[in-house]
Image (cartoon, rainbow, N blue to C red):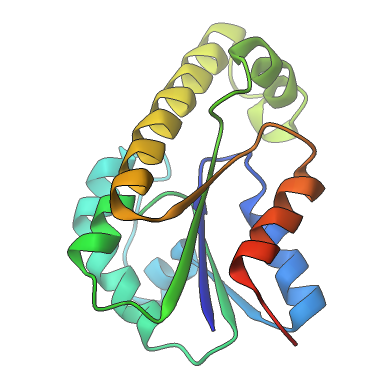
Length: 172
């Protein structure tokens, strides 16, 4: 089985992919590794809708050509609607992770404690979190419309990951 885990920074995509690697011996690939293999330079701060529009077909073709038992960690470089546009990828299970019901203040404190966010001022981080919340709402709406499963990171990550694994129905 091929599994794609999409979502916003901080939702636990990489940790979930690592869990699937450890428990089920899946290989992990990322959008950034696919970009690197294809000599594509993408600015990590580039608008994700632009990245999705430019590269979703390349990413999906690359994923489709992978052998089974691969989990793909995508930072949100493919929008839910892009998956439907290229619907020949029916052999791939897709999940999105986002922040719908976690309030911005709680997210601020979670993100502020992350080493990777030390470069941002409080105001910059608050703007980034507001953007993440907006993208989460947009992607949840797209997921609902496209029949793709969206998981709200609104409780302990391990509980959400168990729900994701149950949904994926991964077996050894």
